[in-house]
Length: 149
Image (spheres, rainbow, N blue to C red):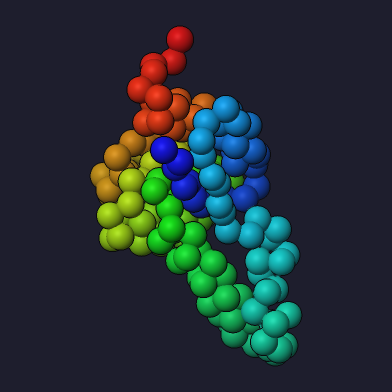
C-alpha cells in the first residue's frame, strides 16, 4: 500500500525534510505547497500581471497557490498540517479545515504552547503530534503495523 501524504503548514523550519528522511524506507509519496516564500508570494503577479495594490498582489498569489493546495489535499490519503511557533499560519488552519471537510486522515503537528489556541483544529484531527518523528512513527504504524522500538 502506498500512502500519499500532503505536508502543509509553516515553511520556516525543516520539519518536512525530517518527515521525508524518516520515512525513506516506507512506501510514501509526499507532496506539499511551494515552500519558496518569494515564489509563493509572487506567483500570481508573475503569471497574471503586476498589481499596484498589495491586496490584489496577495490575492492573485493566494488564488494560484490554492489550485495546487486543493489538488494536493484532494489527492492525499493523509494530510499533515504543521503550525510553527514564529508566524501565524492562517493558511494552515484553512488547509486543516479543508482536509477535514473532505474526510481526509488529518495529523496536526504543533508544540505544546499551541494546544489551547488550536483546540478546535486539533479536535478535527485523528492525531496531534508535537514532533516530526511522531508523524513518521504514525506513518510507519499505518503501513506496517509496527510500534516504535
